[in-house]
Image 1 (cartoon, rainbow, N blue to C red):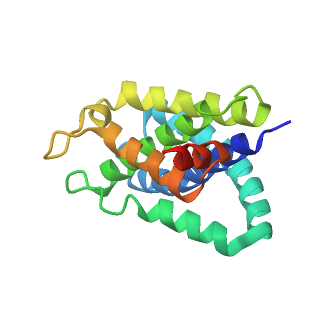
Image 2 (cartoon, rainbow, N blue to C red):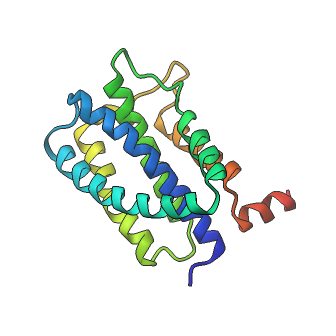
Image 3 (tube, one colour):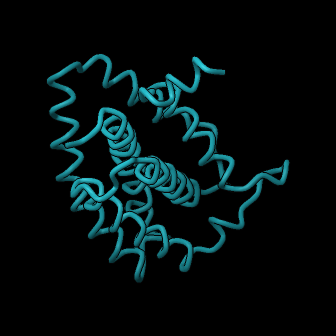
Length: 177
């Protein structure tokens, strides 16, 4: 049985993955970085995620479409100011990467990561992340003018996710502080 906390973490992860599909579409459209092993792994990942995120997002839309759209828009617009260089494909690849990293962080916080749905999301996503890290090292070495790297953006997304979709455990921690 899935715990309520795990359900919220899984939903946060799926929301981030769903949004990351938009950034992947930009990468594919530009075609500059959609090559070699990344192309193979991202294509496989997106096909699978399309099926799983549509199913879950459809169920959430039926439940409370206004709330879902509010959460989705908050997460989606959170990366609007991220800009790497002049081209949009580099920025899109970066945003795709950090959203997936943050989504994996949510899955890794789950008490029961062995559940099938979590594994279906986790394993191929980690494969795509590893491929990006190997094929496009600039993603993990990019720093802003304050010498902050991608981990700061991932932490920001983690914190934002916790603020807009809070678990019982996080709520309890906030009350105790």
